Length: 139
Image 1 (cartoon, rainbow, N blue to C red):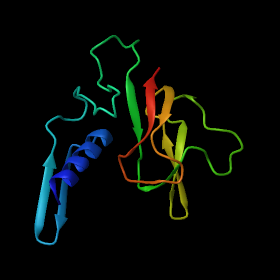
Image 2: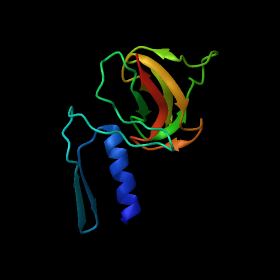
Image 3: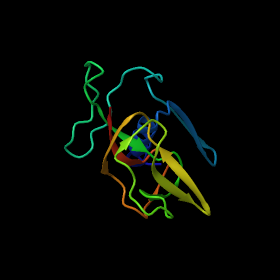
C-alpha cells in the first residue's frame, strides 16, 4: 500500500465514521487508529472548493454533509422499478439512493431529517463502503 492509497483510505474511514481498521496482506499488517472517538466534534473533509466543516453554531444553522455508501455496489439515485424521482426533502431513514450488490438491491438511508444536495456519484458507477454519493443538508 502506498501513501496515496493510505490517505484515500483514511478519508473514507473518516466519512464513514470508522475509527479503527486493521488491514492484513500476506505477512504485513497495517492498523489505523484515528485520533477522534465517535461522537466527538470533528472537521469534515473539503470536497472541491466547497467548505464542509461543521461550524460551532446553534442547531438551527444548516450543516452541509455527505451521505456515504453503506456497502460496496453499483449506485443508483432512483429505485429501478419506481416511476418518479427520489425525494429531495427526507426524514431520517428515508431511501435516498440504492446500491446493486450482485442480485440484491440495498437502500442508502438518509442520516437525519433534511434535504439531499448535489449527486456526487453518477448513476451506474461502482462505489465502495464510505464513498460519498450525495450532498446533504440537515433540517
